[in-house]
Length: 86
Ligand SMILES: [Zn+2]
Image 1 (cartoon, protein in one colour):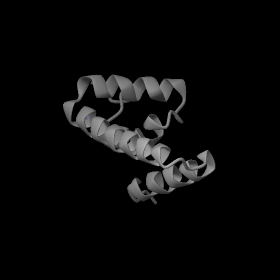
Image 2 (cartoon, rainbow, N blue to C red; image 1 turned 90 degrees about the vertical axis):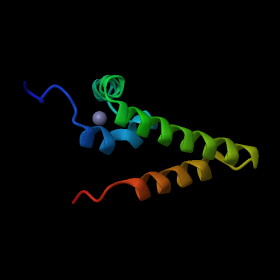
Image 3 (tube, helix red, strand yellow; image 1 turned 30 degrees about the horizontal axis):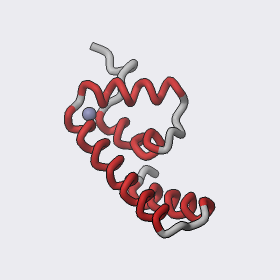
Image 4 (tube, rainbow, N blue to C red; image 1 turned 30 degrees about the vertical axis):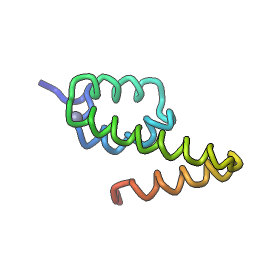
């Protein structure tokens, strides 16, 4: 059993925001997706994050803000949710 070709839950959590923003490499996207398909805990976390993101985006869209501001808000939120790494 080697974990080298699979992400752990922690690794998936760390990449979740980038996964949602589709900022991962295709290989990383595939690895995260594969983990989400087999791990209920991460899948529900992903679903939660995705719904928060969706709701936020649709709210922001409704009040008609410029895309540059949406991007900025998204980046701030993504940063705020990042676990402290270093
Ligand atoms: Zn997991």
